[in-house]
Image 1: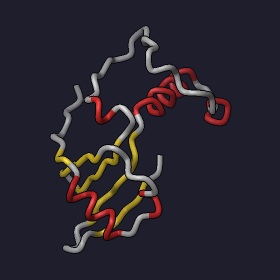
Image 2: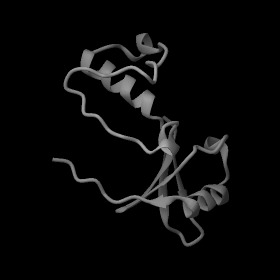
Image 3: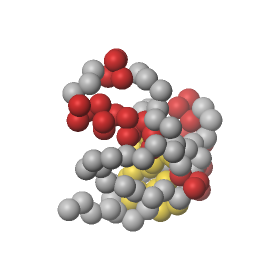
Image 4: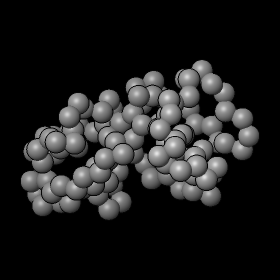
Length: 111
C-alpha cells in the first residue's frame, strides 16, 4: 500500500493511500497466522473463494471491487474508484483534483 501526504491549494493537508480489498484480506490472514510478509507473496485467492471461520463479510459495491484511493483530512474522508494509474507519482495538483472528484465517506464506528 502506497501512502502520500499533500497540501491542497487552500493549505489543507490530506493523506491519500490505495486500498485493494483482496490484498487486505491476504495481509489480515497472514497477520493472524503469523506468516512472514516475504513468505506471503503468493497469488491472491480467487474471487469466487468463500471465506470460512470468524471473518466478517463485507459487501462491496461493484465499482470498489478492484480498489480505490482513500483520502483523509482530520475527520473528513473521501473515496475515489477506480485507482488512477500512476497516482503514486502524480503532482499535488492532480491529487487535489482527484480528491475533489472523490465521494465523501461517512465515518465508520467500530464496536
